[in-house]
Length: 376
Image 1 (cartoon, rainbow, N blue to C red):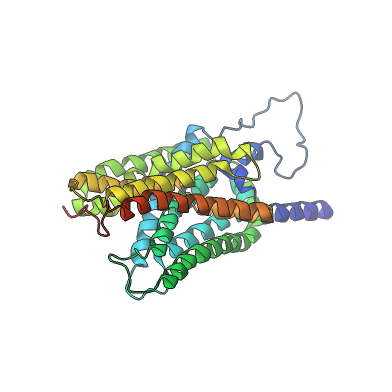
Image 2 (spheres, one colour; image 1 turned 45 degrees about the horizontal axis):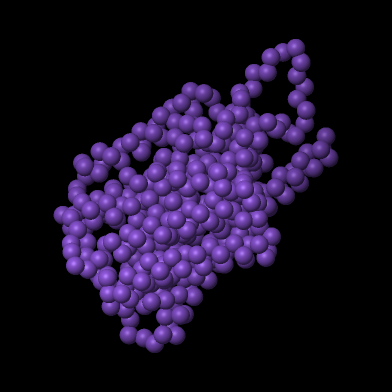
């Protein structure tokens, strides 16, 4: 028996060292986990007895969708909060670095305990990874931030410096974000993987599955949390609309769009996550369009239009694109295929920013300072 336990422990550790992130986005492992015995041993059951084990549910079941709602809402709140906390004069590192590092670290923590958590409560695992981490990190803002660094537009009017410093600024945002994101995922896995066997025993002690009443209460509360963002937009001070409440309205639509597209496209090619590539590219395109719309010359937008543009940029685009899944996939793909995926993703993002923002700016159609005003 001791040898069997040791073999099982070795299998768990190996699976945690190489998490199947592509399958995670597609929801495949969530369907498979419940069909496996908790100890990888045949169950000693009487064939005459009916099978009382609950049927596995698909990744588009309402229970999965419901838990995406609070995950995306809290992910946006965490991103905006971290952004405000780390934006100050004399900052040692750019603001988005903190956002990406924290999201990727939490993603790594979840991947380290993926097996016991997805077996016990798969909807919660999806809420934490696809919902919270995917909405906390953002690929589109990273691409925009990089382009503004190349073009010396990170501040209105730019800095008085030679072009080589613009190149170094852009490279800093490119390389440091990639390195810190991948390292944070691996660090998170390393921190939490040791707790996986303990959690498995604890979940077994709790009965192996979540009671139906608990699932119903959690799912209902999850829907209520997102629905409350609608009255919050109108009840809270209008000063908060451009800062947070408008973004919360678009958080779940962005997260669900990413989840659905990844579910459909990621399984098509195991060596190139087409779903993640698509949502990151689409999110970057939309963010660039909103960026230009906020700075168009020759006219002013209404306060409501400006607030909605800001909400779409921070909420929908921020949740539609993700760095946490992108970094996790880079850690699981073979080396040269990971490089191909990374280069292709960044190249597509930068081409879009150059065409959309560069074309409008160099053509004289946009200003450095936003035309929009978020002040009521």
